[in-house]
Amino acid sequence: MRKKMLAANWKMNKTLAESEAFVREFIPRVADLDDVEIVICPPFTALQTVKNGLRGSNIKLGAQNVFWEEKGAYTGEVSAAMLVDSGCSHVIIGHSERRQILGETDAVINWKLKAALEAGLIPILCVGETLQERENNLALELVKDQLTRDLKDISLNNASLVIAYEPVWAIGTGVNASPDDAQEMIAFIRGYLSKLFNKETADKVRILYGGSVKEENIDQFMAEEDVDGAW
Image 1 (cartoon, rainbow, N blue to C red):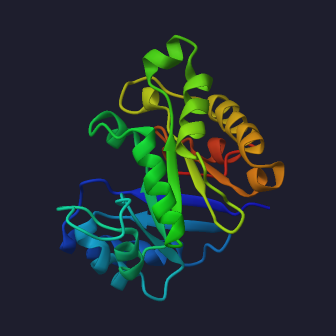
Image 2 (cartoon, rainbow, N blue to C red):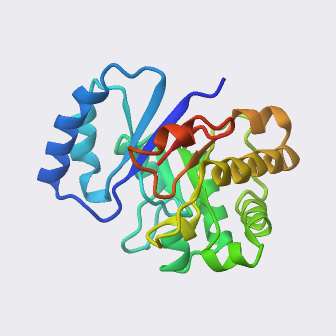
């Protein structure tokens, strides 16, 4: 049975002092949770501070991005080995903001996935459609194409992967996705993973939902059969 996961992407938020204070206050609140895996993904600048704060806790550390080369003249980039050295076990790849705002292509995301897996990191691969794509009935096709290109030539025989479905149309637009919407897409993703790999592999992959998840509705999303967590 897949263990549920809750992942937090801090994006470009929190100073070192704010990060330290948050972790200190947060850990006691989840200390008794042993049936849910928790991953916090702070900015690069706060990785060491959060790592120190999480020491001895049940919370994992993740990064928000990674570069595909091992080393070299790539100003401003961070390699997978550097993330491992910083204490990370997970890394977000292909977030909608990086796809849409920073122009990351599926080819780039594929390179990053390969680099992360090679270093032993667990990628959190983000996929999802915009409102226009959904309204044009292109959601399933779009997500299928993302998965096809992002996971090209990748083997998961001895590696772990998490997928995060985030309907871009349900984030800050005033349009809400329902638990049924999440279940439909995530079940589709799992079914397509069976074709890309095999059913055994697809059944092991945890697929999270992220799109205006709140305290008031998280239980409804988590109750869906194929939804393995939220972020």
